[in-house]
Each structure stands twice: as C-alpha cells, then as structure tokens.
Image 1 (tube, helix red, strand yellow):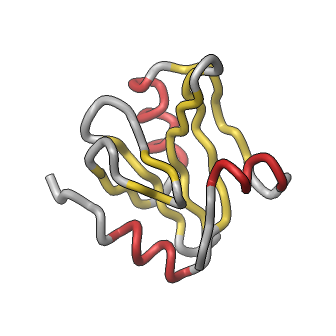
Image 2 (cartoon, rainbow, N blue to C red):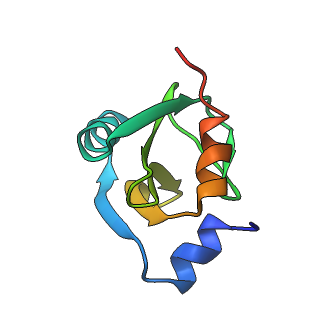
Length: 102
C-alpha cells in the first residue's frame, strides 16, 4: 500500500486527534493509555510515508482489532499531536517490524 500520512491528514476525516500541541512525554502517556499494544521505534523511522521525530524511543500504539495505529505526529509551527488512524493489516505488520524491542 502506498500511503502518505501528510496527504491523508489533509484529504481525509477518517482519523482522530487524541491530543494536540503536547510535549513528547504527554504523547507517550496518551498512546500507552489508549492503545492495547505498543512498540518503540527509533527517531527517523519512516512510518506511513513520514519520518517520525521525537525523543527516543518513540512509542507507537497498535490496535489490531480496530485496525488502527496511534502515533505522535510533529508538524513544524503546530507542535506534536497524537493521531489515531486506520491502516491495513499489511501496514501494521510493516510497523511492527520496526520495533526496537527494548
């Protein structure tokens, strides 16, 4: 699946912003409270067409039942938000493969 997070957020309304203009610590707490499963990735990993930035390790939430991921998304001038969005199963597998297994 070819997917660009930036384009998706501009063109779709099929996502939920759980918190916005937050610090990385707050984002981690929201993701851990919201998602039934979490993984950790290195800063700079490309997820859904966007390089994820933040304080390492970066927490990504996965809900396979709902078919969603929850991730911090930093946009210059707007700060960091936690976004939950639907992805297909193949993309969940690709994201899980990036887990650094602390």
